[in-house]
Length: 301
Image (tube, rainbow, N blue to C red; front, side, top):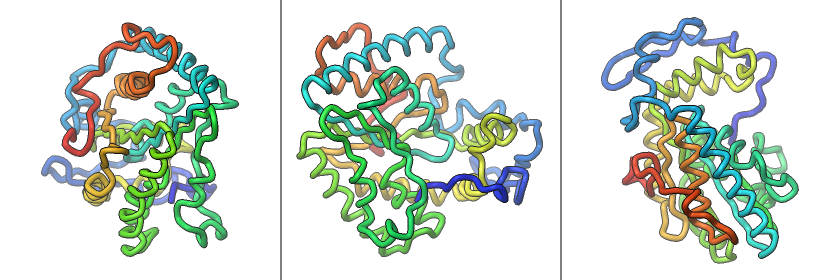
C-alpha cells in the first residue's frame, strides 16, 4: 500500500517531530522541525551506508552526460514503436531514495503518449477485494509502450508488513506468488527491470529534513516518513527477505547506490540502454557502467 495523498491534518507541522534513532551503534535524537540541520547529518550523509564516493558528481559533468543518455532514450522509444516492443521498469527503495526524480529524468524527453508512469494511490474498497496483483496488471505495457512504476506490487514486501497494513499470511502469499507473476511477464517478451535505489540512513534523514523545510517539496513529507525513519532495521529485514525470495535469474534485482542522485540517474538509464538492442545504439556515448554504483542482487549491498 503506497502512501496516500497528504491531508490537511497531516501537514508536516503537525504531530511528532523528534526522532529517537540508533545509527552505527550510537543513539541519536533528531528534531526534524528544527530548520538547522545537525552537523553529524550534514557531514555524514553522502558517505552513509558505505557509499563509495566522498563528493557528488560535478553538475556540469552530470548535465552533459544526462543529455547524451536522454538522446539515446529517444532512439530507444522509436525502436519500441517500430518493433512493437514493450518495456516495464519497477522502481523501489526506501522513502527519499530518489525514485521520482530518477523516473522523471528517464522519461523527460520521451513521448508521453507511449511512455507513462504508474504511481498508484492506496487501493479502493473494490481493489482491496480483488486479487492483490490485479490493479497493477491492468497498467502493464501494450505494444510499443515504456512503462515505469513508482512503487509497485512490492509495497506488500516492504511498506505493508512493516507498518502493519497486511497480515503475515498475505505477506507470505505475496512472496510465493510474485516470482511466478514475473516469470509470465518475461515469458511474454516484456523487457522487465527491477531497480532498488539504496540510500544510507543518514542521507535519508537529510532528505527528509530538506523536504520538511522546502516550501516546494514539503507536500512529500508525512507522518509515515517519521514512522519509517524509526523502523529502519525493520525495513532492512523486510528488504533482505524480499531479495532472498524474489531475486531470480529471469527477473533479477538491480541495486543502485543512490546517495548521489546524479550518479544513480546515470546508472539506471545506462543499464536500460545497454540491455536493449535498439536501432542506432551508440555504445561509445552510453559508456561503461560504474561498478561501484550499480550491481545485481543482494550480494551487491
